[in-house]
Length: 115
Length: 115
Image (cartoon, rainbow over all chains, first blue to last red):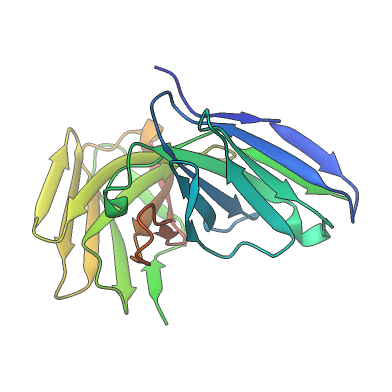
């Protein structure tokens, strides 16, 4: 079965550079979530989109922005990168909002290293 | 403040025994609770969802209970196998009302099944 696709899988950037992470949800899934997971930490929710509209917002820094496109893929744009942004970034998708009462399917993640 | 507590220390269980993991939460009134499995460097994988009006839910060797009075969920793996070794995350929807609410995760319990 098709899974969530994330690209790139690994990314190395310098401080103050920008990065763009991409997420392709499972076909027919209309909801996308972004999470950040630091070393030894639990995943922290950043932002979500339903039908191309921002739905919920978590602890996403102002330096980050995201959007969902007409084909439901999503991009997380990160500017003025800091060392503390080094983490695994997961995208998850689901079908419909259901008030969130449904399983989320996570992608393999993008490992971002900021030097 | 809202808090989800899991025993983040490693839990060592002998193969064949039942592993029991605990998730306690405060200042939430979740309508449902989810459990995920996460292997190192990989995305969380959904295991079970239990709703507030369900006391218990089973799936193969997995069982989840949900006590909204105690604000606690227990996650059981019966006839445990070394392949069950992983980090298990408890997750709640904080119901910010946006629809596609991001999950709030506990820090997870690292389960080790010893042969």
